[in-house]
Image 1 (cartoon, rainbow, N blue to C red):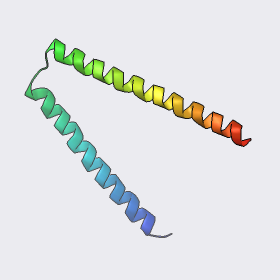
Image 2: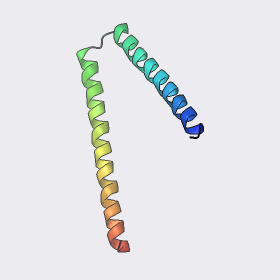
Image 3: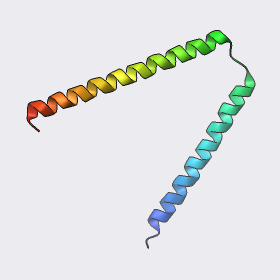
Length: 75
């Protein structure tokens, strides 16, 4: 068995594990730092909803354009 995949998988697990640890720690520290008001939460949820809707809309447009291109090319 070759050793390169083993080294790369171990390296990947270490890097991703370290990154996840610090991401969770940062979010936990941010939550302890201060509580947001209700208006700030609504603004964040509204912005997240708009971003999600824009993503779904763009995904639908790309999908429809792909199907149209496939139909035109006769695939």
